[in-house]
Amino acid sequence: MKINNLNKVIVPIAGLGTRLLPATKAIPKEMLPVVNKPIIQYVVEEIIEAGFKEIIFITHSSKSSVENHFDQSFELETILKKRVKRRLLKEVKSISNLKISIQTIRQGQALGLGHAILCAKPIVQKEPFAVVLPDMLIKKINEKNDLFELKKEFEKSGKSQILVGRIQKKDVSSYGIVKLQNHLIKSIVEKPSLKKAPSNLFVIGRYIFNNDFFKYLKNNKSSNSGEFELTSAIQSFIKDNNEIYSRKLSGNYYDCGNKLGYLKAIVDYALQDEEHGKEFKKYLKNNYS
Ligand code: UTP
Image (cartoon, rainbow, N blue to C red):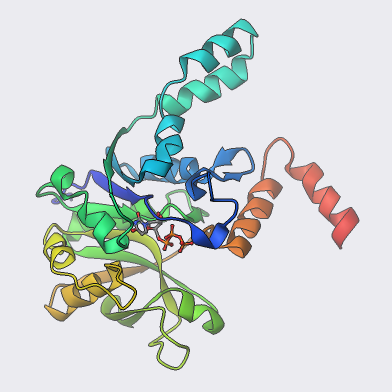
């Protein structure tokens, strides 16, 4: 039974994407393509499939192409119509006819992920909310995606939820790492050294919080680098006896915020592409096996 309706998702896209420079000097990393769609489109499709009704993009002045991508393009549609490119026209139209409302709010300065999420408070108001980090692509393997399951669990229990996955020990210093007791998250630490990591379970960028969490984002202290991190707000939330439950990832993840993860995404998505997947596989076999 549903007792806690969850409709809103915050998608922060105001970061600078420095790990993918120079590709991201003039193009937002969310607009980099994986096969024939920008990364952000896969993420928006995942959110719609999970059953959310509203997306709040936290943006920056350099990210207008993300907003434009989801807007109607009359000029392009007119040209495609004139040239009788029916399939392309249908595809282009479907992007601006998505069954979800999209709002944007600016984060004037990239002061960190925690700060970016707090910027959405005037829109979220008193409701619970999800946070989806768009540089992490998750390819589902079950009928329902992980975000859907996370949402379903929250709506049943009203307890905050975080999706976690296993990584190789050598990679713990690149992510937020959690310590669990059964499914309950006991603590979280941002980018720990291998020695200090409490486990090899990392936070994958899909979160659901009850509204109280905003208080912890507001009182959050900045890190040594001057950023207001999400991890430190989560740790304070837990310390105050607020429960956050973990759910293990079932799909495959691709961290497109770094070069290697982005390359893996391109290859895997290309191999499964309906139009060219088979030929691409043959190409790889002939040239690289
Ligand atoms: P990251 O730290 O992974 O992304 O933030 P980044 O800052 O864009 O990239 P690098 O580290 O310089 O390569 C995770 C998410 O949080 C957003 C980013 O856009 C990304 O989607 N973010 C980060 C903000 O919206 N605002 C910020 O101040 C920081």
